[in-house]
Length: 269
Image 1 (cartoon, rainbow, N blue to C red):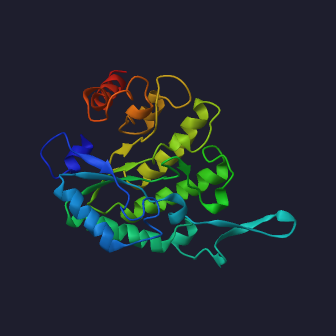
Image 2: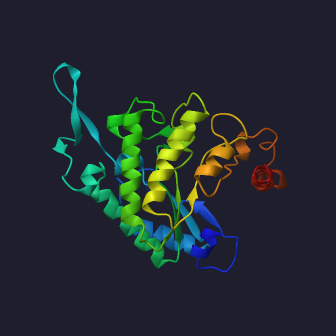
Image 3: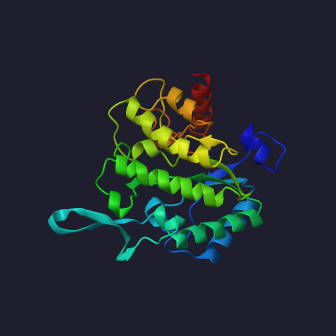
């Protein structure tokens, strides 16, 4: 209901899609071409799209690298060879350039009447892990240093963008439970609580979406825990990988009904 109040449309159902720029995919922020993005948004609006789920790619927006001294001792963080700037963005390890590009993007979306759901920790996308250089090789979901930088990032990003009218919801990120392994539900809960708490402490005016993949009533990543810590759960139905769903053409009844039935099944649970 909270999200419906933020939508400029008087209906409960809206149509949206994930968005990456057509010219670059996940490289859209590093290969920033605003003229192409504007064309994409215009076409999406003309096609009747209301909402875009968008993704600030984690290593682009928080490009921290570790500096090592004698004996391999860790000696701080850098942007390449440069010290982190002595400002709020630098303290969060966030690129001011990428933040400016995202603000440009949000203004473009608003111009075409498109609303945004922002997947904040975009470390997993399209079968690949994307991690800031300083955190590569770490257990992303359980390592204290990794969680510290994730909290810094989401807190800064949300604070900078919370006044943007185009944004209707925050999302923990795209299928963040695929970014690494957890040993039990306590570790999954602790990670979710850290990120959720950082977001809600900075902006409690928008709903927070879980965005997790394949939640279950039992196991490490449960519907109950995600439901406690976020406002909206999601289904991520994939007919191609679901038994008995990938035997018919994608535009026929069985695959097209799959998403609806999975969502109804999950909501019933």
